[in-house]
Image 1 (cartoon, each protein chain N blue to C red):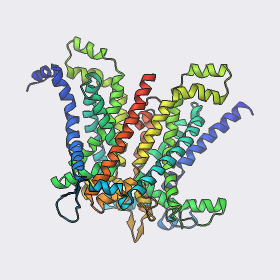
Image 2: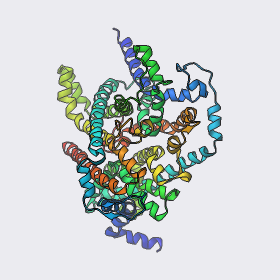
Image 3: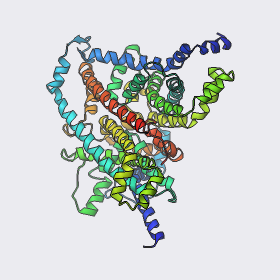
Image 4: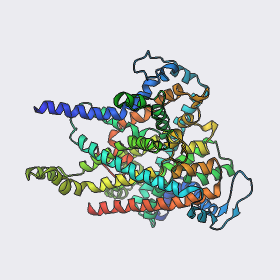
Length: 276
Length: 303
C-alpha cells in the first residue's frame, strides 16, 4: 500500500473513533431541533424539518434565566475565590514548607476522594442549623472550599518548577514579599492558574448534588434544572432536556477545544504534566 | 495598619507563613474539619431528622449494624467493587489501545477538533449524561434499540428496566464517559518516553512487544498507574450518573454505595446510620489517597 493511502486510512480511522464517541452527544443536539412528535417517533428520525421552537420555549421559561445566571455566577465567584487563596497557600507550601505540609496536602486531596453525600451530609446539617441553606454566599463558600484542594495541588506543582532564585533576587533587590509573590512569581505560573481556573470552573458548572442539597430554589443551577425540571405532562420532557443539555455543554466543550494543552494537568490534579 | 507596617510584618517569616495559609485553613476548618468531627460524633448516635427527637447515644450500634449487613450494605459495597473493577479494566484496556492508535497522529488535519470530540464525554455533567442515555436506551423510541434491531435483529431490549441488564447498561455508559480519560493518560505516558530511546529501539530492530516491555513500560508505567488510580477513586464515588438513569433500581441491581448513602441521608434522613457509613467510606478514601501519594512519590524518586 502506498504511504499516502495508508496515512489517509489511518486518519480516517481516528476520525471515526472520535465521531463514535461523540455520537450520543450529537444525537441529543440533533434532538433539540425536533418537535416533540419527531423526538418520540418510532423508528427514530434522522431526517426531519428542524425547528427552533424548543430554544424559544426554553428562553421564555421564567426559571431558565435564573438558572443560567446562577450557574455562571456561582462558578465564577467560587473559582476566583478558590484560586486566589489556593495560590497563597501553594506558594507557602512550595517555598517555606512549614511543618505538616505533606499531611495538609494529603488531607486536601482526601476530601476530593470521598463520595459526595459523605462530604455534604454534615455540611447540610450545619447549614440547616445556621439557616445558610439556599443562600448564594453559603453555596459559593462551600464550592470554593471544594475547589481548593485541586487548585493547591496544581499550583504547587507549577510553583515547585519556578526556581527560588527569582524570589531571592527580588528580595535582595529590596522587593517586599508582596512584590515577589504577585509581581515576580505569579506571572511565571500563569499556565497553572489558567488550568486551575478552567477545570474548577468546569467542575462547579457541572455540579449537581451540592447545589441540590445545600442550595435550593433560589440558587438552582442548570444541572439542578435538568434533574428536577425534567418532568412534564406525566412523563419526561424530552424537548426540554435535549435543548437545555445542548446549551449547557457549549462552555465545557469550548474550554477543552481552546485549552486542550491544559487538559492533562487539569484531569490529574496537576500530578501529570505534558501536552497531548 | 498602614501599608508600610504590613510589609514590615510580612518580613517576619512566621507571620508570613501564617498569613499565606490562613485563608485556606479557615475555609477548611469551617467547611470541612468541623463538619467531619460532627460526622464522627453522629456516627455513634441514633439520629433521624424525621422523628424530630435529638440524637440519642448509640455506642457502636451503627457499626455493628454495618458489620451484620443491615440494609444489605455489603451488597452495595460488592456491587460498587464490581463496578470499579470491571469498569476500570475495560476503560484501561480500551483507553490504552486507543492511546496507541492516536500516538502517531501529530500531523493529522483537524486533530484538535477530533480530540475535542473524543474528550467531550468526560467533561459533561453525569446528570446530563445519565438523562440523555435514558433517552437513547428507551425501549420504545430509543435510538440504540432501533440500531441494534436493524443491525443484529435483536428484539426490543429494555436496557434500564430489565434487572439482569440494567447494571451492565449503566456500566457501559461509565465506560463511554471515561475511556477517553485513559486514552489521555496513555498519550501522556507515551509522551514521557524519550525519543532517543525509541529511535535506539528502532535501530536495534526490537519487535513491538519488546519495545513496549523494555522501553515504553519503563517510562510510562507511573503515569498509567496514576490514571488507573484516579479512575478507581472516581468510579468508587459514582452517583449522579445513576440517579437519572435508574435511581439504584430495578430492585437493588444498580444500587451502588454512594447511591444508597444519598438516599439514606437525603430521602430517609437517617443521619446516624449515614454518618457511620460515611465514616467507613472516609477510611476507604484515605486508604486510596495514601496509595495514590505513594505511587506519586515513587515516580518522583524514579525521576
